Length: 233
View 1 (cartoon, one colour):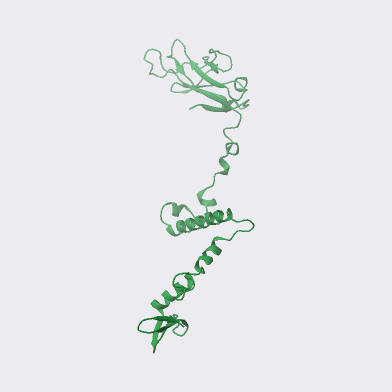
View 2 (tube, helix red, strand yellow; view 1 turned 90 degrees about the horizontal axis):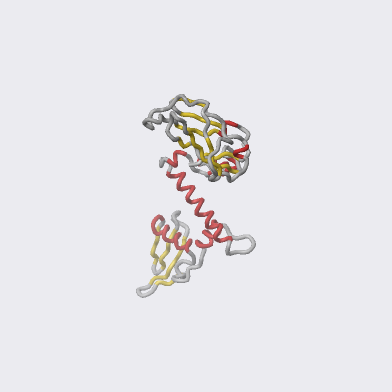
């Protein structure tokens, strides 16, 4: 992976390249006496040269750095390879550098500042939910997301102001029931009758069958019942 350096970077520390120098005899033992040595660079595949890079500074344990010159990183798109070799060291490959048109340390330039965070940008969701301890929050977020997608989908099919997901839900409940409409005229009415049959009461007085709401007094539906037919009143 290449080190990214901004074109014409003026800060020398941001132009540092690094080397691990080992003894020439075994290629493993760290070589610690190369401070002041001259590394070389190759720009875009050209021949290696001493121009464009300073001398080595020892960091310890055979690890060194040297600074590229500002002129070496003047142009975005330049690719730089580094090397070092002395009588005491094995051939060492240094950092590969890619000169870019932006500042790699600037989150805004990289577009990273626009990435939302779970804690602040996702409504109803927090770290506890992500750990699986707050399923209610997760369900709330999922519901809101589904409703938002429904609103968007509906808006693409209407000109002007489209109905909201809540309005659509109400319309579905009030939709006329074509089959068995003599019993219930809408989904909502059918649900009321089912609820009343479970929680309310119903009576048969002569041939009149009545279904009451949960309060026991409000009549929801009445039928005339015979041995062969049931006719709504």
